[in-house]
Length: 294
Image (cartoon, rainbow, N blue to C red; front, side):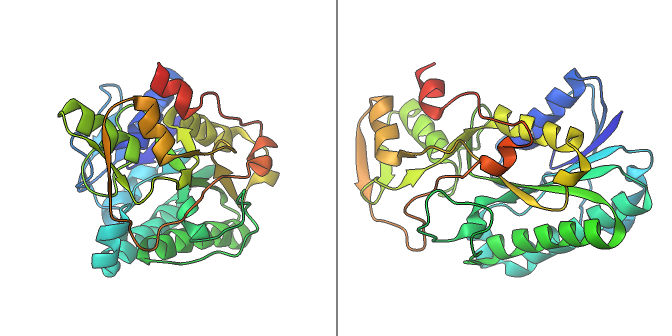
């Protein structure tokens, strides 16, 4: 089997590439290596890499020939930069996604798995968050990622291309990016501890987050290409169905911390309702508490 992974040099994508290689797939990766979030671009010696922009259809379309499954993770994925440059966010996340879907369609790809985001729920106070909640486009990031979901659903309904969209909650694990204010909070804490600084907690730290392990996210992607066709054409939460406060994470790490001013426009609580994806046979295997203690 042949798989194509966009964004396969990043945090989540590189773990997916490794697992696909382990499973015996022939793996092609498209990644323009432009993300400022990545200190390192991870590569697997058994995969083939192309440094190309998904917004350039002519540059990438030929790479889809003979591909069975596409995993689309490439994106402008930082909220701050997307707010500063909404045109780039739309170019990559909307036009880029359309290019991926069109190239998949004309090359008879069997299925596309799209990496979406729980940011689409905005500041919803409904807990747990389920897939039928009204969606809240707070910023260019969530707006452009939701447009990608809409394109996936349209390609399924109109063209018969099987697609599955996965709404990730707060992904953690090995290879987390550590730079920038929107890096995963656990990675920021780890870097601050390593550098001998106090951990910085935004606001009172009582904001709760649903943290999901990166290899569980990989498993959700793999299940999405083997599940029955009736699971296609819709979105699924990928979380744990549980949450923990940022303050409790800091206390669990057991190092000094300090509070810094709160940031506007951040959700107070996130927790995924995973009833829908559990019907696909997926469930989380490890909590953030267990991982940190290890």
